[in-house]
Image 1 (tube, rainbow, N blue to C red):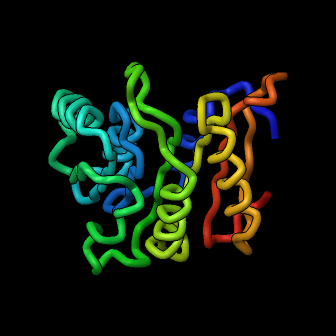
Image 2: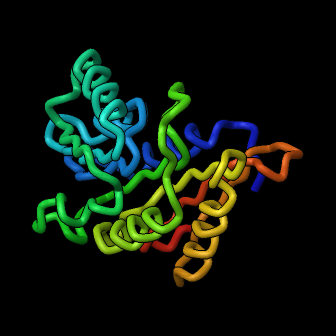
Length: 192
């Protein structure tokens, strides 16, 4: 389905209908903290967000942003790659996580930032699938237009199609073959 809305807006709209106060969620790629903050607001005071990013600058940016907004107390940040999330999420939350957000690519605004890579993203997606509850979902936004992005995008598409479940798929309304896309995939039977 093509959309004129931003893919982030679409993933947030879905989250607003599915995430409840008190839920536990994961931001697998915190970047500058915008998704992390959104998720922290959704889960409320009794919920919690676990955020991951390999880049120290991303963790610093996110921590500062969350502190300024006043939601840092409901977020735990880890300066490790998303492929390590299973080691850091308390075992009590296995199959209890309501949502895992992936906004792949690179840290916006930083020229020399590293990019997410297919091999670590696939590991992280498999871990996320094990972590989410039966009513949980994974939001994956990918960007094929940067160096390494096309390969990662193809890996994400393949992972989703091989996962025997329903999903919702959006592509940004553009004529470019490098248009970004978004999958919302869950154990719950979403309509495709």
